[in-house]
Figure (cartoon, rainbow, N blue to C red):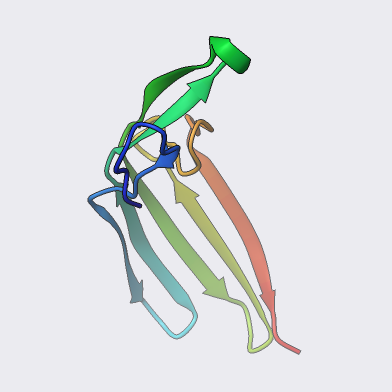
Length: 114
């Protein structure tokens, strides 16, 4: 986004953002890996108030780094199980502006091929 004057609202895109995933297959049934995501700081402008009491202010969403692990096990041709974790460094992450994720997370699931 281009912010040419002080009346533009919103957040600029970060200068740096990337995600990385490396997975190793131990056997045809078991795999494990590491994942990483990084996002630079985002800057922008917002307004607060109503009518003549409106003020503009600068907004900064800080950058973040997310490190995680993943793994899975294929039970048979049709059924498998997987597990993924993230935020192993327990940083404050804002993927969506103004919504903070602060804790370690774990997701588990099954795959079923019919």
